[in-house]
Image: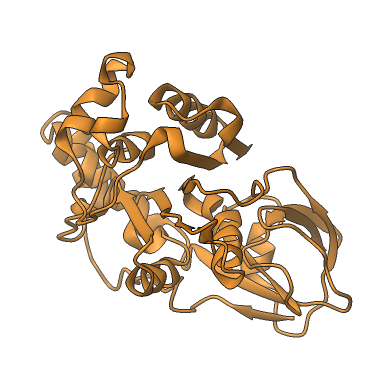
Length: 303
């Protein structure tokens, strides 16, 4: 078993020796001396500075026996007697499995995996489990919608699709999209992997959307919720605008921030959503409201 917390796809900017009297700053915000978006930005920056570092880790586990799983499934791992379920982030057919884990202070097992797990330690793996798996390949495009580490099973699916040549079916080259919502750019798990795929495959499109990154850097990409970002990339000629939820219309009209020529036709799209349960339920509802058939939408929530 090997463990790595600073692979390029998880590298996170340390906060350095920034000296700010946060008690005074936040007190001013709470008392109204600093108001509106500025106050929210300051609270967000304080939360970022206070969070554990690193906040993401990639764990690669070498297997004693082959694990037969489908892209999108998860396993239960036990370390020092504590079990926890994690999605498989790599494609099947390899001698190791990859997990993507966010550090949650006080969370079950996550802190131990960050602070005590070392190369050579043994963990117990059980599974696979889960029903959110790829449909049989058909000439339809794919859109994967995720927040945070909910992107892990989609990395497994995307890698599987390209490894097996399933991005072309019956002569139809499928557009494959990953919409990933996070607060900060260095919260984007596997971001360099997805960017490399975007650079080398004309039919792969990585669209990160970052709600807080503009507080910290000159981020010029998407910043809206995943469902609103998705709406920006819809093919307007393929959507019944008069049936869309009203809150989506401004985003459809605005169009994308990112330079992508392709557009989404809901009638020819398979959608997969993963993340916090309430978010997944909302994304599924929005996808069907956009015109994606019910039987072509899959979701899996956690938390």
